[in-house]
Image (cartoon, rainbow, N blue to C red; front, side):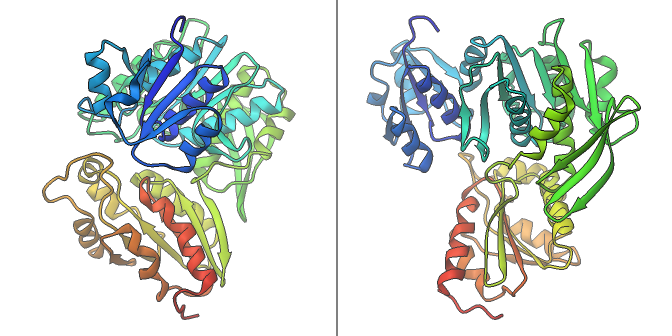
Length: 464
């Protein structure tokens, strides 16, 4: 990025944008940015030397050489309009990520509807265990490094590739990992076939010496295998996969399995996190490690030491015999996987699930899938939809979703319009031994700590 020294981020508080900003600050660039409100993320960027504005205003971009926007920022934003009228380049986050990827010898891009953050951070753990010191840009706070970004001295840059608006096609990685393809981001894609075509284009961008690591358990990816023209390595639990997990055993908050490569046993893998979906995520990291010829014992060490990511089955605490767990799951597929993992961990405990639907378009497109996704819950509390900058759609609401769910047997469903009212609302129904799970991608992530605080201070009387 020669002659570009001042980089401004619109929406710098987003988890993906803040990672790029942190890396650029580490590299010595002048970084400014704006967001609607101050958060822990914006405060940490200030400590690193960034200039962060609360709110959007045309004067915020003064002196900027380039303006970076996320997919959540609209073209009518004040700062975007000012940049365009001043002929300052306005680029998507993916284009800036592509420039950073060019600074390293090899780029690894992790794409997929679900599991990108966990898989990317597991890969990071494996490469760090091998002493490769990778650069990492992740959509979540990795417990092992205490951040969502890290500039390493090694040759590899590992990053999540955001398929939500097709902008991941700007990346030029050497290795691509695709965890799965699902009906997601249907506000941008017309249907599943359109998503599959875009992923094919993405895979086709890797060079002749590159590799596509694909999950063989995912039906759309299996369907694509015959038309992918690049070198492929598949992973999963099925016998047709190159890298296979066998003898999977769930115990407590962890899982173990034996890894097999094309019919030959490699050895045992131990994880400190639960869920079959994490078995698959760890297989992707193992596959990359094998491709890089990392000794198996170092891959084992990297995976066994992996401590997870913030808001991914994150146990916030336990008080008065009630445990609180927070997870980012906001798509039916993710919800099913997360609740199955919870049920395996706590088969005898009551699961009280608090869910905030995210985006009107997603709720509309997947309404039927949402109504059947909470089968493992004993009690479900629903809020109104978190809009994420979308305008309401007539007939699409959290209240309607709750009504549809009440028609399903086996789950008690409550509706509370405001997410902020949930902690008070649930207190009288909680029992000793309950596991409270907050699920969603919006404001629900702030509710878990509040629930714990209320339990600790006995702000409400809990019937135990």
